[in-house]
Length: 119
Image 1 (cartoon, one colour):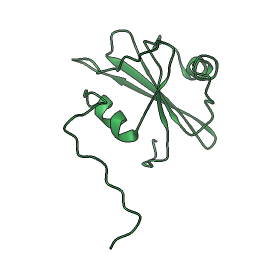
Image 2 (spheres, helix red, strand yellow):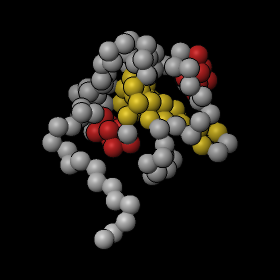
Image 3 (tube, one colour):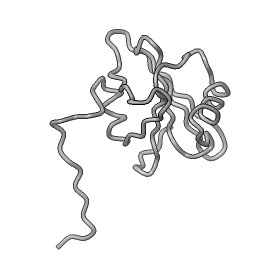
């Protein structure tokens, strides 16, 4: 299961991906196309051409998790990158927005506030 930690990096694969790929095919894409390590404890998110299906590949301790989400209606607000071969790095918060059908660039969201100590 996706651990609830903000330390996980989230990478969006640019463009569309053949969502028929399973763990091995997606791990190969991560290493050869995205040039990242699929064994890092990161989330790698892929979207199909129709933008109604997502897969998330996640290595945890001793094996892969593969999450699959299919929308019955509507489309994911999949971001377009300036470069078609450039991976997009987002936060876990932005991933939640994406999974909820929202843009990863929420103009009305409250800014994150972080303090080093309470005064």
